[in-house]
Structure formats: structure tokens, C-alpha cells
Image 1 (cartoon, rainbow over the protein chains, first blue to last red):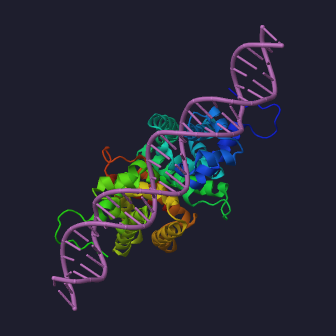
Image 2 (cartoon, rainbow over the protein chains, first blue to last red; image 1 turned 180 degrees about the horizontal axis):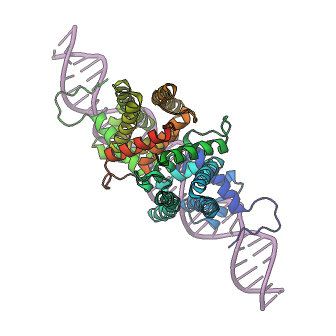
Image 3 (cartoon, each protein chain N blue to C red; image 1 turned 90 degrees about the vertical axis):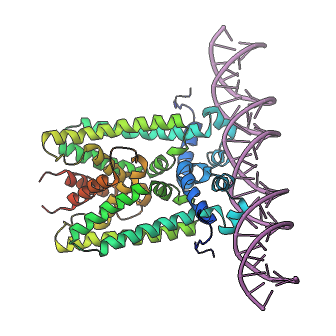
Length: 200
Length: 200
DNA sequence: ACGGTGACATACTGGTTGGTATGTCCCGTG
DNA sequence: CACGGGACATACCAACCAGTATGTCACCGT
């Protein structure tokens, strides 16, 4: 296994280049509309090379998912385990997930648009990981509810789905060349989330 | 043009059947994964029939979009023009869009997942209509803001995108066989929206 | 020096796909 | 009753596509 330990070449390794081009192309035109031939040409390699590292086109898509899941989970964990009271941590977590999302819009476009194109087994795998992620976020909300900092008139998991829906939707309208930075947007979204959880 | 004026046959017209099966299949497996052959077989007609009513496969997808846009817009207009103060109307509008969404989950799955598969011109057309829809919703929020019923610390269009993101996401997790009815969910979502707009 | 293995390149295939050209039937109109 | 046109049915095609079989070659441990 080429453990991405590059020593001689300066440019990214073949699998890395494949993954990068796949992300760009899948996000731009959709998984089914990108042919393997086109993909390998964009990455400057041949089909033989691609099928040497990935067992199928599906496998390449799955690799994108794995990268996204890993990144998001590690970032959330950092914030959740960080200091501050629950309000601060939830605000930080919400703002961070927005920033990470707009910084990786291609990933997010693929994530939500192409899930049904993965093999059923891999879909389940992705959903399982995603659920763990949501549960970590939810635990933060539940903590605030039990402390009485947040009201609990609406089930926490509905709030989580509500918020992540808003975040997910970013990939459909947010343009990084607009006037709104990811940090600003993150602050707004976090404010909206906290406002909707505020006690009277 | 067969203006859907059916007189003799009891069963839906050929174009209606095509549209219904297209909605079901596109939502279930994705536009690119449904072949025209398969689609016409499901509708019990032949390719010749389909290409008689629709100029292309793309045209059929567009027809789904037109139906959705028209339905949503007319429902929102009814609520907006209805009586009550701005809080009541916004709550009703939010709850209604949730209910309509969960009642037409297939439409929504297609709407957000397949937009990029439409021809560029038609994508623009859909986005234009969608913007009009958002603007109508936004006008309600702005009305509340200028009346001082809602705070205006966050731009209204961000609130709109935030809320519709949450609604859009429903197609990714809501199951109609679950324990939560569309009306209940609509109430929760509307409550969350209003809570996040409440003045101190 | 040699045998093997990982890292690719090249060439090819069987199956599918959206779209079209052409034909047929039926029904209202003059 | 001729006939024109709408509503389909049938047959067909050129393009493409994911995946594979096979070949090549550099390097590396023995």
C-alpha cells in the first residue's frame, strides 16, 4: 500500500491526483456524467493506473466520502472537547462546520448529491458514520437542554436535522466569490441556531 | 397540444403517466440511472409515444420541475395573502411548506439532486422561478422586521436560505412511515424559525 | 544476475444509451 | 369517401462506457 509517503516526487502521488480530479469533476458535472476515461486524462494518468489503485469507479467515489467524513468528525471532536460552557461550544461547533463546509464546497456537493450512487453497502457505511457525527452534535444540544440553558420544547434530533439541513444547503447557493465570508456566514448560522434554542 | 383534457379514458393520459413514472423512478434511482427504455416500459407505452410528447429526456425532467414550482408558488401565495398578522402568516407559510414537502418527497428529491442535469438554459429558468419563490417568503420576514416584530440582526435572505436549507434536507432523512407526521414536523420547523427571529 | 513484484500502459469488448427515421392506424373534416 | 394530421409503434444506429486482459519495465531482495 502506497501509504501516501512521498519521497522523490514533488507533485502529488497518482492516487492523490486521481482523488483531487475526481472531486472537482464529480462536483462539477455529477458522478454519472464523468467517464473514467475523462477522469484519468484530467489526472494525467491512464486507466490502468486508476484501476491499479481503485477497484472501481464507485470505489473512487467512496474514497471522497471517507475523506470528508474523517475531516468533519475530527474537527467537530476538537470543538466539542474544547473548553467553554455549552453555549460557547455549540456556537463554535456550528460556526466551524459552516466554515469547513464553504471551504470544501465540492466535497459537500458530492456528499449530498451522489450518496444514492454508492453501492448499498457503502451507503449504509456512510450513513452510519454520518449518524455518529450527528449524535456528537446532538449531545451538545442535549447537554444544554439538561442544564436548562436551552429550552427542550423541540426534540434535539429535530434541531440537529434542521441545522444540518441549512448547512447542507450551502452547497446549493453559497458562492465563495460573493461578499459573504465563510466566517461571517458561520457566525450568522450559529446565532440563528442558538436563538432558536434560547429559553424565554 | 393535449391540454390534459381527458374525456373517454378513465386512466391518466399518456403524458401524465410518463410524468408520474418519471417522478417515481428519477427519485428512486437518479435521472442518469433511469434509461428511457425502462421509463416507457414502466409507464406502459413505447419510446415513440414518449418522444411524441417530450422532445428529450431532459424535457421530461424539466416538466417535473415546472410542476413542482407551480405547486409551491401557488400554495405560498395563498398563505401570504391570507389573513392574520405577520407572525401568524409566517408560521403558517413555514408549516405549510414543510407539509407540502413531506407530501411530495419524490419531487423534492429530484428537485435538489438533479438540477445540474438540466440544460444550462433550463437551470437558469428554474433558478429564476425559485428566486421569485424565495423573495416572496423573504418579503414576509422583512415585513416582520420593519414592524419590529422580528429582530433584524441577521439579513432576511440569509434567514430564508437557512430555513429552506432545513426544508430541503427533509428529503434526505424524513420517512413518512416514521412516528412524526408532516403537520407535527411543520409545527416544529415553524417554531424554530420564529424562535430564531424573536426580539429580545 | 535473476526472479519476482508493484506500478503502471495499451488495446479491446460486450453491453447499453438517447435519439431518430419510418410506418401504421384512426378520426374528424370537407 | 378521400385525405391530412395527430398519436402512437417498430426498428434501428452511432456513440459511448466501465471494466479487463495482457504487456512492459524499473527496482529490489537474495
